[in-house]
Image 1 (cartoon, rainbow, N blue to C red):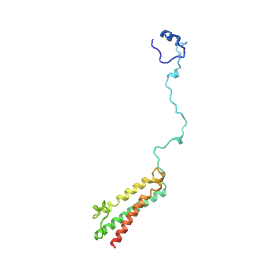
Image 2: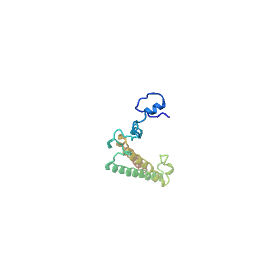
Image 3: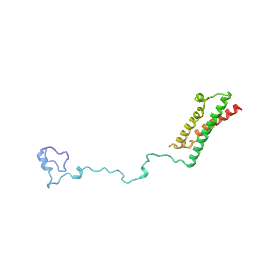
Image 4: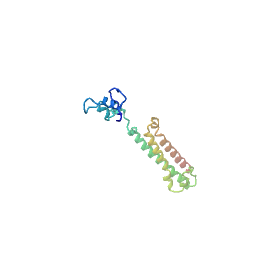
Length: 169
């Protein structure tokens, strides 16, 4: 007879399998020396069964953006696009009078066509995207300086436009 895998609580009196079978047999028919609960699968309970929402981390967390910051972002986006348009207009005006050349090598291919207006809008759009990403960054220092790229971009375009107007006059 095979040896049971679960040890019984009864002491073994001999090494014979028959003696083992008779000593480990239950006293009453249908009863087992090993409890049924130890053989059946038990559910695994969590260590702390109480639901605590403070311990849970949200799947997606975006910092809160105030209405004031949104308005400033839109104002800077409009300003930087307007300054880029001024730069394109003044550059076209200076080039049409043969008073100057396009200094930006990336914009030089577009300098003598109307595509200059569209090409100069690429930089403000990219800077606006970077500013928006900085505004919702998870890093506090980055969130504090989100307005810097847009301000610098608008300032450079405005300076270039005023410079080109000064060359023509």
